[in-house]
Structure formats: structure tokens, C-alpha cells
Image (cartoon, rainbow, N blue to C red; front, side):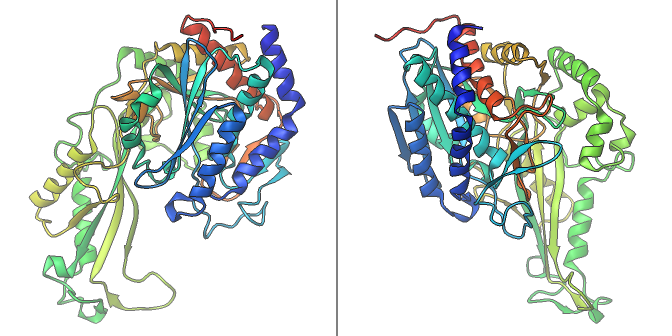
Length: 495
């Protein structure tokens, strides 16, 4: 290890408690995009954090939704990397937090089997890793006198938790901000509870939509309001009609989970040989029984026991999932009503080469073909035909930033589990697709959990293979130096 890296690592160790305080400060600022709580204030705080990390330029840009914060850290280096971050968090209403009285008054507590952790909304998703990266850059800039081996272009959005509706538009109209970038890093806590590290090369896409059946649109059943259920023998039910419509979408008796919407699978891309090779390696390393236990499920689909088949289904198959159904009365006691209206919220997880608008149009045609022309189909973001949800993304396994991430992990003592993609969704496509076409890696040692849930946490101290804040920050520094090396260039020393 170079003396420069040693000096940066030493500075991180010496100042780690100050770094903890910086994370606490960021979490203490509420930033709930879904409710427009604290967003402008948090954007201004992030701008200040960019300046403190060494950026000479840091600006808050307005969008049709929540602000985007941009920062430039110029070191005179020949290599430039983008850094994607998010400063918004999920709602907390209705949640019972037990380790803090207020999710926006974070605390450092003991949490076995870990030692110290930060508990608060956004601790791991993702204000903790975000500030950890900024802490690392700040120390590296101080130790090197502003001569990092890479220049950095920061972008922090405030709408990731509501599907990033304005991020692509911002990046497309401000692509000059990323001119000269070779790749993008998304800081993250990539270790699980056992200390295993995962590296995902892309993700599935997703969009949500609602179906609604009402007596008014149907022309049958109760048309104005619910009625007494004694009339059920002679008045038809919109609830049962919607259920029957849903059943047409998964109507294969031999495979009840297969989607039977016409053309649903026609664009799905099969895994390549390179991707199958990744999954064979993954399958040999994963503990599928532990995965089932962590999910609280007893069996996988058709009793799959793991292996490549399970991973192919998880990562390469689109889904049509019911999130929830709302209609009528479900409270205590008898209500004895026949509802006049019912709705269901669904989601589709998209894989290459599926497009959300095309899938939604197929669902509309499917309902029409099966005699359900009256059932309303509404995209959740109310932007049908233009932007619906998040797109899928692919990252080239041969991209230098990928090999830089793998080598950085290995030199830090971890052999990462390399996944062809994430089964979930993140706005990776904003950077990997035109106009930028930049590879992106989600990277970082460290662990946290309970994202979106009560008692969300981020680990501060090393616990065996699970690393704490200091090691996370060192891993970010390691990646910056590895990326400079992989892109085959050396920093230009400033006078």
C-alpha cells in the first residue's frame, strides 16, 4: 500500500468520531419527498456538505419536483468519475420505532450481534453511506492537499424514494455537467449480516399501476355508493368482477404464477453465456436456506432448492405482483355492504428488453379482449405514454470500473459475489443509457439494515467480517485510486 493511502487511512481512523457526528447531522434533517417535508432544507445542507468535502462549485438546481444538488471537485486529474447519491428518505408515519423516540433524532446504540450502530431514518438508505463517502473524500483531500487521482462530479437527487421522476430529465438537459466522466459510483453498504459483499451489474426496472372496477363505469352493480348486502342475490359485485379480471392474468393451471397477458414475455432477453457463468459462481457460494430464513419463507416457487435455475428465475423473469387490494369494509364487526368500487395496486418488474409503456398497453388490450373494457387502468405516476416507472439497466462486466471495484474489494480481503443484476430497482439507467452511457457500480464496505422499516441502522464498529464506518470510508478511497489506475492514467500534480 502506498504511503499516501496509509496517510489517508490514518486520518480516517483519527477523525472517525467527528465523521459519526456528520452522519448524525445529515440524518437529523428530515427529507421525505413523498410528503414534501424538509426537502429544500436538506438540499441546502447537502450543498454545504459538498463544499466541506472539497468542492469549489456546489449548486442546488430546481426541477419540476424536488431539487437536485450538484458539486464539482476538481483535482487536475486526467480521470473524472461521477458520484450518484440520494438525500430523500421514506415516510415514518405508523411505524413503531423502539430504539429512538424520533427517527429524525438519531442515536448511537448497541445492537447485538453488532457493536455500535446509528439508528434513524436514512441511516443506511442512504444517508449513512452518502456521508461516509463525503467523509472519505474530505480526509483524502486534506491529506493530499487536493491532489486526488480523480476529479469527482457529485449529483444528489431528492426523489429516489418516489421513483426518480425528474432525474433523467435533469441529467439529459444538463449532460455537460458530466462531460469527461468515465464511470459513476453509487456509495452503498454492500455487506450482508455475515460480511459477504455483493456487486450488482445493473438492475430490473419497475412500474406501478392501478386497476379500478366500479358499478358506475361497469353499468352494473351499485353505481352511486355501497348498498345493503341483502341485495347481493340480484345485484352484481364489482369486487368479484375485479377478482375475475385478475385471475385472467394468471390463468395457466399448470403454472399458476405465470403471467398469461398476451405478449407479456415476448421481449424478454435470455441470459448470455457470460451471465450464466456469473450465476454458476454465485450459486456455488450462496446459502439459499439462509436466504429463505431471512425472507421468512418456507419454500421457493415449485420447491426450487437454489442453484442456477433459481437465480435465472429471480433475475431474468419479469413479474406481475399484487401489492394490495382496497374496497369495501374490513374493520371489526358486521357492516353487511355490497361495495360499489374496488381498486388494486400492481407492479411489474421489467427485464431487458421490456418497456413499461408497451407492457401497460398489453395489459389494457388483455382486459379489453377478455371483456373488461370498463376496468380503469391508471399508471401510478399519472404520466401514461411518456414516463412510467424506472427502466432496467445493464453494466458491462468488462468495464474498468467493475474490475476496479472487484480488485478493491479483494485487496481489502473480500471476494465479492458478482451478480448480473439487482432483482430490485435503482435509477441506474439514468447513467447507463443515453445520453451519458456511463457504467455504474454500487460500492462500499459496511452494513446496515431495516431500510424503510422501524429502527433502521448503520453499523459503526467492525464486528468480525462485517466492517464499520472507518473501513467503509477506506474502501471508498481505495476504489478512487483503483479507478484511476484502471483507466490507465496518473494524476497531474498541482503546484
